[in-house]
Amino acid sequence: MNHERSSVLFQQAKAVIPGGVNSPVRAFKSVGADPLFIKKAAGSHIYDEDGNDFVDYVGSWGPMIVGHCHPDILKAVQDTMASGASFGAPTERETILANMVIDAVPSIEMVRMVSSGTEATMSAIRLARGYTGRDKIMKFSGCYHGHSDSLLVKAGSGMATFGVPDSPGVPADFAKHTLTAEFNSLASVKELVAGNRGAIACIIVEPIAGNMGTVPPREGFLEGLREICTNEGIILIFDEVMCGFRVAYGGMQELTGVTPDMTTLGKIIGGGLPVGAFGGTREIMEKLSPAGGIYQAGTLSGNPLAMSAGIATLNILKQPGFYEALEEKSRAVAEGIAKAAKDAGYPIYSTRIGSMFCAFFSKGEVFDWPTASQCDTRAFARYFLGMLDEGVYLAPSQFETAFVSAAHSEADIEKTIAAAAKCFKMIA
Ligand code: HOZ
Image (cartoon, rainbow, N blue to C red):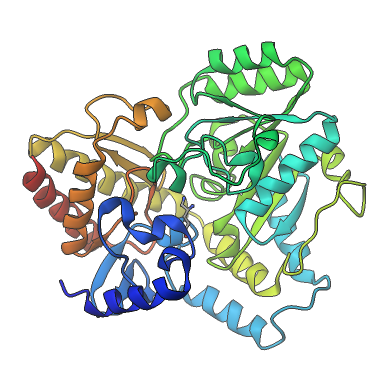
C-alpha cells in the first residue's frame, strides 16, 4: 500500500506541530509507523491522501456512531452555518439539546455545554469540589478523563500507550489530591476512602473503561461505588464521554440501572463537532455560575454548529431499532475477530459492550490496568499494521477502543474478519 503523500505531509507537519499531530495517539508512534493523513470519509469508510480506502473502526474516537457524512447531520450543519457560526450569546438550540440530554440520561436534571470532554470532566470536578467543600478526588488507574492537571494521574489512552502514566508539568501539589484505585476493585476504593474520610469530593469513573482497551465493569462494581459514595457523602461522577449515547441511548447508567450524581458527556452529542457537557442533579448544578458561585465559562460553549449536529445525531439514535441493529453488527465483528484468532491458534481476550470492543493480545482475562498492561503490544503492532495493509483502520494502540457505526455493512464486517484471519495467521 502506498503511503507516500501521507509521509510527505507528516514531515511537513512535524516542522510546525509538536510530533506532527494535534493529539498524541494519532502519531502511530507505538505501532512503529507514520500516521496516515486523511482526506475524506463517507459512511463506514475513510480515505487517506494517497487514495487508500479503509473500513474505519476509529470513528473519530467515538463520535461517528451513525457513520461519516450522514445526510441529516450535513444538512443541519449547513443550514446552521448559513445563519452564523458563533454568537457568544444564547440560542434556542442549546435548550433543545439540553432537553434531549435530560430526557435521555437518568442522572441529569440540568446540563451545561462545553467544547470538549476534557473541559467537561475538569468542570465537573471543580463543581464537585465546590459543592462538597472537599479537595481530594478519586480516579482509577488506566481510566482517562482528559488532560487537566487533577486527572492526568495514572491515566489511560495516550498516557498508557506511551507508558508515561504521569505527565511532567503537573505540580506534585495538584497530583497529591488525586487518589488512584484499581478499576473493578471495590477493596481498593474502600481502603482509600477509609484513609481519607471526609476529604474526598468525588469518585470519577468511566463506567466502561475505554482508554485501556475496552474493560467492562464486573458485576457489582458500579453498584458498590454507588453505595460507598452515598454512605460517605462523595459525589459519584460517571464519565460517559465515550459510552454515553453509545452503549444505549441513556448510556451505561441506563444499561446498568446505576445512577451517578453527575455525568460527563462529549463525542456523540456533538455529531463530530467539538463538544462536551456535564450535568447532574438540579441541586448540584445550580451551584454553577451564574446561578451559583462556582465558575466555569467558554466562548464556544453551546456552539450553534455543534448543537445542530448533536440534535440531528440524537434524532437518528432515537429511531426504533437503532441500537438493536448496531448491537447485531458489533457482535458479528467482535466475535468474528475473536474466532479468527482462535482458529489461527493465537487466542486473544475479547471484550465488548454494545458497539465498543477490543481484542486484547492477552492469554488471560483483562479486568483492570495491571492486567491490561501485560498485553503483548509488539504483537498488537504487527496486527495493527497487517490490518491497515488489508484496508482496515483500527486505533493505533492496544489501549484504545474500537467503535462500530450504523453505517458498517455486512461486506465491511466480512472484509474485517477475513483481514483479521490473515493477520493472526501471520502472527501465530
Ligand atoms: N484521547 C483520545 C483517545 N482515547 C484520542 C483523541 C485523538 O487523538 O483524536
